[in-house]
Length: 284
Ligand code: SAM
Image (cartoon, rainbow, N blue to C red; front, side, top):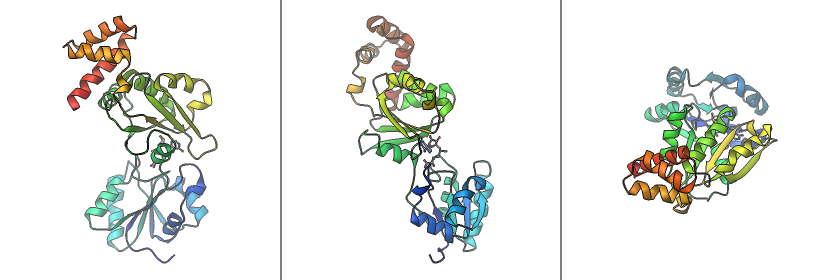
């Protein structure tokens, strides 16, 4: 390949299976002047494998501001830069969006290459409809902030896509079940493109038991996909009773208590769902 023109190339790399790098990504990485990498040591085996010998420059969340200025200087000198992250598409729940923004502001071409992305890979195999999704990425780690976000998404009609770390996946699916109700559809996509790839669909209420059913299921990398809100998704008996009580003007606490007495469902779960209903009314 001839030398690339001075531009910022956004280059996706494999999320597991090393054969998933595209020929164009290989050509660009072999011919640029600089490779900005989230972790240069992590990227080195891949770069060696494809014969890319450009100078590398670390660009991660702790040095993003300074590294971005230096890389924009490289572009200003007419040098080409490829941006890679540890896995998948850079700037998608990964460092790089500041560099992309600054390069564009400064008038340089930003050339994105298509390639691996865990969210899109998981969505394509989820069976959860093919048109609309909302990519959220990582939820906040703290319970209260995470619940606030989940509540704000309760009545989103699109498939919801989350990234999650293995040590938090159990508490996250439990929090989801408490807020979205046990009947909402979930797809757990773990270890995509790797040896132990697993794509499991179940109602949210069964997710915790499935994860605990085999210790290997709690290992690896996860994408969680939730089916979007539909009128029928909320038409469970408890959801209907809650709605009625809230519409009658009862407080969240009173509605949850009464709905629990009427339906036998747990007070805490119903309180969460009542809060979520109220919050989604404020958003609509
Ligand atoms: N930029 C990447 C992309 O395009 O997918 C995402 C980077 S983010 C820091 C890492 C998260 O992506 C993981 O915690 C996991 O949620 C998800 N992920 C990455 N690789 C995965 C895989 N092979 N299988 C399932 N999820 C994966």
